[in-house]
Image 1 (spheres, rainbow, N blue to C red):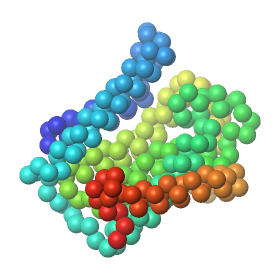
Image 2 (tube, rainbow, N blue to C red; image 1 turned 180 degrees about the vertical axis):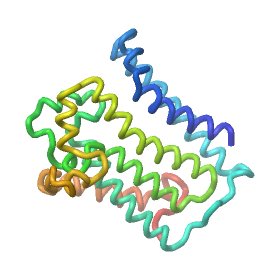
Image 3 (tube, one colour; image 1 turned 120 degrees about the horizontal axis):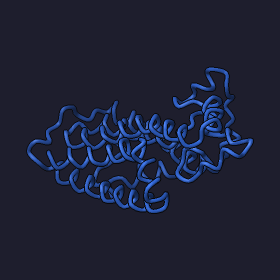
Image 4 (cartoon, rainbow, N blue to C red; image 1 turned 135 degrees about the vertical axis):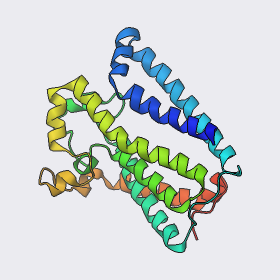
Length: 230
């Protein structure tokens, strides 16, 4: 239990207290952006491997009992949530976005706010949050609660962390972008700042998201040893 908790805490704090705060600014100012990104990437990969190994070990430990059980309803909800997650993650990763790593220059484009960015300026992280929440629904063992709970918290708080980091680095340009968009999905559309445009998201992104969702659902028992489909 302690190993898994330590791994989860390391991974979350690495991103929220190092990557998203003035500590990052101080480190990059001292060693430079390139070396910082290299060290941070290595630490992230190491942390992810540690977390994965600790989770695999923890699931079979005596303390990892179930706090809730899988039901037919939660299984169906999970399948739908994973589709929603993919519909955010795939377009989010393939759309130019100033919140993404090394894409701050996208702010120079007059048409930067389009497609998925009309829905949320953090489509990838919201997709990860929904992915983690769905897995929490169907995995009530304590090891899964730690793993997916940590990913859910990291994704949600990560949106605010990135906003603060970009504001410090980009100033007025970021303020203008943030004023046109929303963190919470669809809030800018509901508030009248944006209009939904599925055409801007592009059909190939939506199709790719659906294909990946279907492939992961079908291949889940082969990849992870647990069936996702009924």
